[in-house]
Length: 148
Image 1: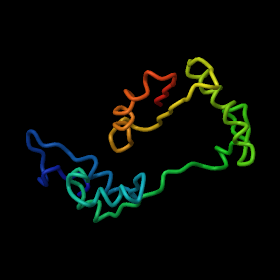
Image 2 (image 1 turned 90 degrees about the vertical axis):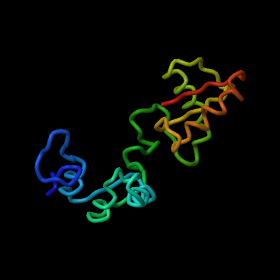
Image 3 (image 1 turned 30 degrees about the horizontal axis):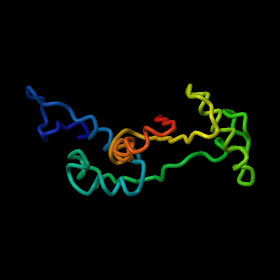
């Protein structure tokens, strides 16, 4: 059943726990993850699939490309910014948006200072290790770093 114990036993025994992840995978209509590559990675071996790779192969898993709703986040109509732009006006909007970002996060607003931004989970897969390893190369420069 979906609620089998992690080690395959049918009845609870002291120290054994229900595998809720397995139950979720088996009871769901569709299993998805953040990318086609990650879906393949999860079924490649038991370590990457958290020992559920055989379940993922049985039920199937689909990877969807990270993305956004281009209508909701259209820079011409974006309700979260006062600077509206499109492909033809982006270079005019860029310095205004940079100044707004600097002000929003409490940094000195300065058009001449480079801003380095990082948006992502703080793990090696997302490149935070590269940022951490290179900070010493530019930290003494006049630069601002924003990590979200």
